[in-house]
Length: 164
Image (cartoon, rainbow, N blue to C red; front, side, top):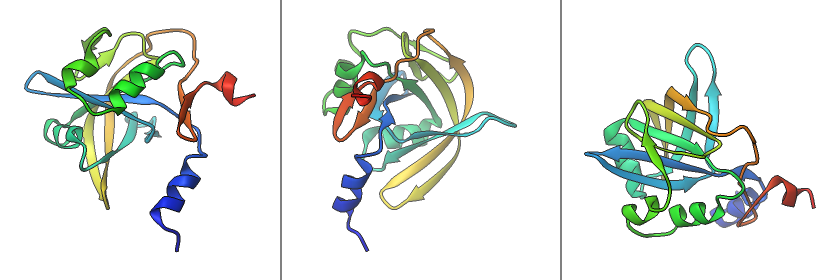
C-alpha cells in the first residue's frame, strides 16, 4: 500500500487545468483555486464535478448554498490562481478583477476561458473530500482563444511551456 505522500508525488506529474471555484452565501462571495474539475456528462443534462476538501471554508458554503461556478483560467492568470490558493480574506481574492453573478448568483470571472454556473445535484463524501456534482445552469464563453493555465509538478505553466 502506498502512502499519501507518495500518491501526491505521482499526481503532481498529471498536468491539469486550473480553475477558480466560486460560490456565494448571503451576498458574500467565496472562492478557491482547484485542479480537481472534470466533466461528467453532456446528456441529458450537462454536468461536471469538483472535489473540495471538507476543511476548506468554501466547502460548507457550497454545501449550504447548493451552487458553485467553475471559472477556467487562461495562461495569463497565474497570479490570480496564486491569490485564490493562498490564505487571506475573501474580499482581497476578488479585488482587481471583474466578476458578474450568473443564474445561480455565483461569481463568474469576466475574461475566463469559460464559466460553468452549476447547481449541486449530488454530493459524495470520500474520506477528506466531497465530490460535488453540479448540473450546469448557465455557461459563458468569454473569449475565443483557448490557452489554458496548467498546473504540473507544483508549478503553474502553459501548453507552450509543457512542449519544451
